[in-house]
Image (cartoon, rainbow, N blue to C red; front, side, top):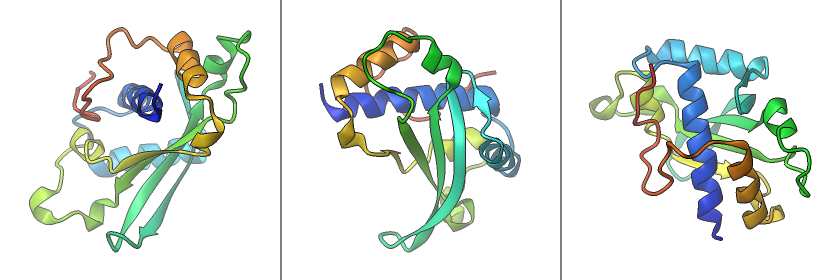
Length: 160
């Protein structure tokens, strides 16, 4: 299995869980405040747990990016205790453009549109994981039946 399959699964989990925490039509400043507070308190949202949130300057784009760090929640980790691999260290970052750095003509009007501008998803130490086993684990602990993992548009759906 390719690494892309792991990225797709983590993006799907991230999208679904964040959209249960903030509304698609929520004001961006409120959504960012909630995400920041969630990261500061290591908020657990169903299958994931926020770990940290920070901004970092990108030499490529000469702008700042917002990084939201996540891990699997304790409940998710304990739902499959007989698995051979340790998934406790699986950490990934959702990378978004800093809202103030987005050009006015493409500035999003709500949280869902802003989250759809996700630049990338980084998996910390991705090469340390057996991709097949990690995807198998995620398939066991998360219901992807309603989610299409191919050709996803991040945060495009509205969950109310």
